Image (cartoon, rainbow, N blue to C red; front, side):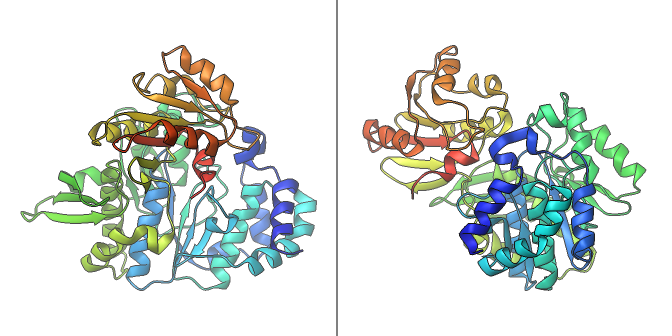
Length: 429
């Protein structure tokens, strides 16, 4: 098989959550354990950082990877889903896995696929671990796909566990209360392994503390060590002033991930670096300051308040659940613009009502859908939105919806594309 044939095989042969949803979710680790055992347990041959959370885990993973590679470490990065090319999921120092490796790994693993019928995600996790081991990375940042306790990535024995936050997402699989969802995410906490909690609430805090106590895992909360005392935007760059506990001098960090929701993610990253330094990783302040303004360039992260055009300003953001949309709209309110246009599409298995009722009725809407089976029909989304006074036309194609928004916008307007990773992925750039 060539590369495209291999990708087609993986998409069609294996259950793919991003396409079909819950039917592809395997609620145990046995397939991953079997796959890794057949490969000689590659996950035991490199050091790792394991990152979970409802929102922010992708940004935190990419920022940590950027800092580590700037500090001189050969750094693997496993994230999901991808925007354009499957190889975005598996990177070393920002370079995607080679097409040749994807092909050779898949051909080698076909007998195991036929024997145990794994999911797409289980195969990609095993592929990433095999690649990182074969390339002898110093460390890999591994982002969970969904949840934590039963996520395929949860076979690693990391240097550090990180949980960014807990919010309402995938309730059909993770639980219908924040404490239940937190319990699933807390499943990545390992015996004796330090864990950083980015955000905790009265409902989730006891869950994290109990799990950490059971596992005798040192637990730290990012907001206890540092606070943001000011921020500003400067040429699509976020500048954050940070006060550190027991220190008088404030530090300013420049981030190319310009969404203000990155402030909390920054504090989580800094707390994570503290723990890595305590474990002997040679990461210095100059590495952090050099990495954070170049995360996109160093790791290839896009789709987080991503300004792709100006006059009118067009922003892409993969925010898609209640908390994610709330953070985006907070940023919209702080953005200088005349009128807001929102190009939005969602997937079927989200809590649409919680998202829709957050959206401003004063905006102009362009309802659309990505070209995946999970996509909510644009006409259905338009109908649901009309109940909350949101008005606009529906478009079966993402780029047709964006073209219509551009046609109706004037130079001082803001066009926001959001609601689904898959909608953002289909925007032609």
